[in-house]
Length: 125
Image 1 (tube, rainbow, N blue to C red):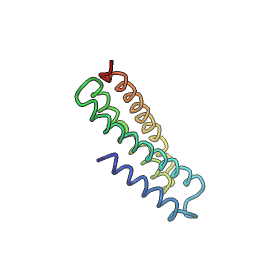
Image 2: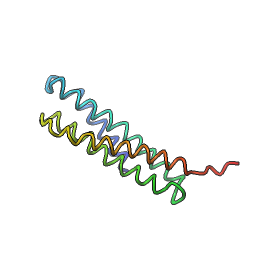
Image 3: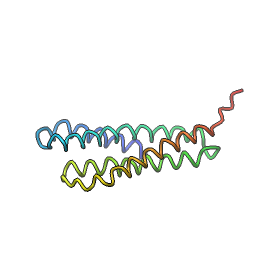
Image 4: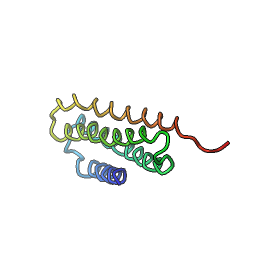
């Protein structure tokens, strides 16, 4: 559900940026906004993959790492993209100090997903 909502809001944010923000934001702010939308949309798909993978993993090996991955993808999108969206609209560049925290959460999410995948057994001989 969270992945679907993040995906929907990513599409809305992209459309809003393409139509309503033309000529409103500076080139730098537009860059921040576009980066936020890109990471927002891409990581919504990654979170969706976590949800689908959880159907296979269940409570088996790797499930804890999958949970960590999902939490970090969600938090990472909110912190990374959220700080960039806010910077684009407010011009408060000090918010850029927390953007890397969101990036770190996204990296942790990907590494956790890799650890989860390494622990999954396929059951195929």
